[in-house]
Amino acid sequence: MKCKCGNIISNIVFPCSTEGSIISQQNEEVLEREFVTEVKAFLSAVSSGRRDKWLVAKFGKDYPKDLSDADIILDLYTTTSDRYKLSIAECEKCGRIWIQETIGKNRYCSFSPDQGGYTGLLSRNRQGNSSRSPKLKGIEQSDAPKP
Image 1: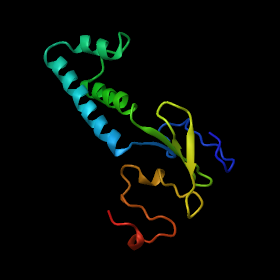
Image 2 (image 1 turned 180 degrees about the vertical axis):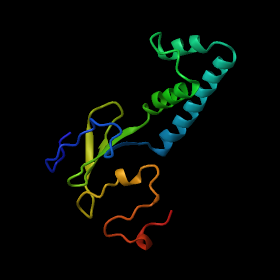
Image 3 (image 1 turned 30 degrees about the vertical axis):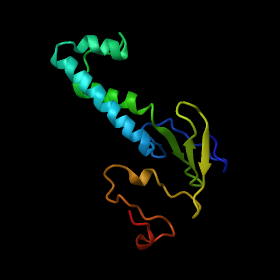
Image 4 (image 1 turned 60 degrees about the horizontal axis):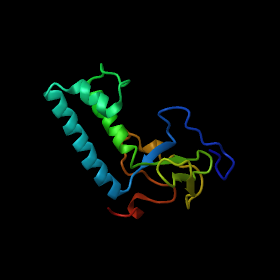
């Protein structure tokens, strides 16, 4: 995707430090309910000896049957959550954030940071990073809004 600053935003590499997804609180609640329902249905099929039949009904006949239950639950999460998440991308040159306008459509709107420039918002908030509340350029920790 070409940013307004002229930079090309690429998501060829996965996982990509400048790509991610966002979800509204309303969609998050629906996602959680649907995901739990899907997992319960799968576990019920496993415990009643209908695992392979359930996999075919859910994912189709070409879905691998040799996956672990954990891998299948991850696939359930992915297929369920993809229906509710919007894609987000951050330009590494100007810091502009691009948010998908509609799930499943390749249309994005952009927002540029008030402080200007790339701050690595998505990349610095990865799992394992010690700070859950990063310092933003020009904002001291004491100035940050309180939750």
